[in-house]
Structures are given as structure tokens and as C-alpha cells.
Length: 187
Image 1 (cartoon, rainbow, N blue to C red):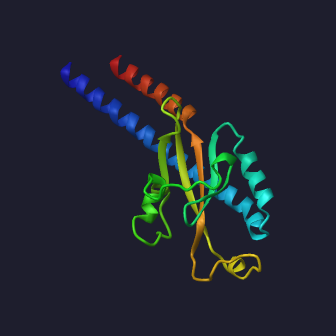
Image 2 (tube, rainbow, N blue to C red):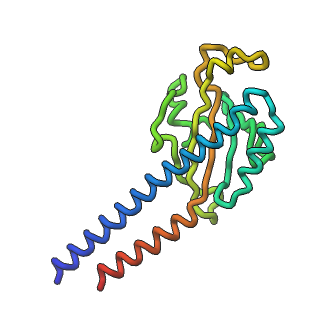
Image 3 (cartoon, rainbow, N blue to C red):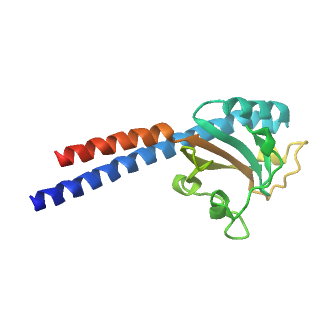
């Protein structure tokens, strides 16, 4: 009996962890795709320096229930666009988790894996968890050659798109699945 209980407990733990890992990997992939889509949809507005339309686009995207934050930060860490217009102009802390991985050195790192660009946190102590993911906005030839932009050819990263999505539904599904596995193991 003791051996059976130990085996089923180990099975339950491994099964729950495996399900959670698969779900997190899928969340990373989906959030990265969403971030890429938003960045591509904002590209023309950034190239045309159409600030009003870019702000309106982010505000509209931020009205989706699952999206808690969507914002663009410049290379200095100032929030230049956001679905929450009250935070525009605020500086983010470069020592914060979302910035530290790139800014641990004096020069920002150019490429990070999805796992390194994602973070999990709560916006408020009593709120559901959210997953934030950053996506760098690289300089490109059409940008440094544009008349209205002041970016040098040598500048590689102009800023980042930072998006945070709610994990409330995912956490509920994970808890229900864990409960089923534990119940099965007990039975």
C-alpha cells in the first residue's frame, strides 16, 4: 500500500508538472504571436509617425478582456504609448524583471528566447496572475533613412513592445486538471 501510494503520488506530481509545462509553452507561443501581430500592425503608423492612430490602435487592443497591458517603451525606458494613457511618459525601472535581462550590461542584448522575454506577475495583490512578454522593435533601413526619424544607422534596438495577458482562465483550468489527477491518484 505504501509503495502504491508513493508511486501514484509521484505519477500525479509528474503529470501535473508536465501539463503545466506544456500549457506554459503554448502560452509563450501564443503571447509571442500576439505581440508580433501587434508590432506588425503598428509598423506603418510608426513609419508614418502617425502617433494618434498608433495610440488609438493600442487603446483598442487593450480593451480586450484577456489583455491587461499593451505599451511601447523607448530605448531609455519611457512609456511612449499605452492602452492606459495615464502611464504615458512614465519611466520603467530598468532593474525590474522585464528590463533586467536585457539591461544587466550597459548595452542591451539584441535577441532573447521567448522564455527569457516572458515573466509572470500580478498587477495587484488581489488580482489574477498575468504573463508579460516583451518584443524588441529593431531599427531597419526604412526607418533610419526616413525624413521624420532621428535614429542613426548604428542603433539596433529602438524600443520594445510590452504586452501583458491575463492567466485567470489558464490558472482555473490548471487547478481543475490538477484536482482531477489528484483525485484519480487517491482513488
